[in-house]
Image (cartoon, helix red, strand yellow):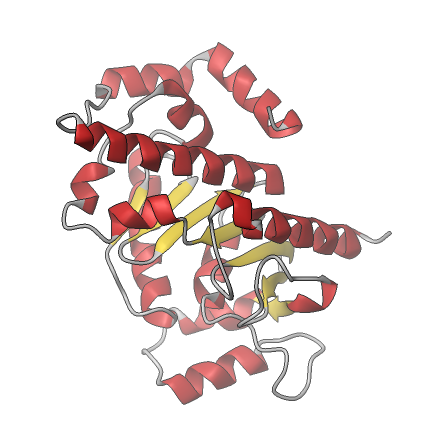
Amino acid sequence: MSDRSVILDRIVALSHWLGDPARDLAILGEGNTSARIDAESFFVKESGKGLLEADSTSFVPVSTAAILATLDGPDLDDAKIRQVLLDARIGCTGDRPRPSVETFLHAYLLSLPDVEYVGHTHPTAVNAILCSRHSREAVAGRLFPDEIVCCGPAVCYVEYTDPGIPLAKRLRAEVEAFIKDHNMAPRVILMENHGLIATGKTPRDVETATAMYVKTARVILGAYALGGPRFLTPDNVARIHTRPDESYRQKLIAERGN
């Protein structure tokens, strides 16, 4: 089996995991996934295809350079965005399959070091927070050690922006600021009034960050029922993030999914 086939099998499996109704992460055509093929290209889910029903024909190979080039140009109208997405496909003709409108942000994230898989979902518990008036305040700190181990020292927060190129540009700016502050790419990105993005080197990384942040969202909602969250101090967070035993446990979680 070629590396390309292995990557495709993995992104299909990740999509099914994220689309499982029992996890309440996405329904119908919500959410999208992507995987880096090589330095020049990546797979992204076809627009409108549900995560649970995705198969090997549901992912479109896309030119990374062609998509990234649009992020340094002017915003485009809907017709031009559609054409850019169609033209960026590799080995495809006609109007189908059409890459997700979120292909632009996937291209950027997959260009970052140690990001080879991306999963974007709309978990009910997470969106209950992101659609609230005090969402930024609610996610401003870390609450418990496993949140830090699986989701990193902080989340990257992106204010609501129109999906497509405008959102990808806004997300890029926020991620670059995050990297400057934390010297690493964010494992979890929260998009206001929209949903969650998890990144990782493997599909398991994406699953782990997604699952743990959904638990975090439930803990946040419960904490507000008893007066509000009590965040760990920055020193507490830094200690957990850099502890050798926690790094070892993080590696085991990534390898075995425990």
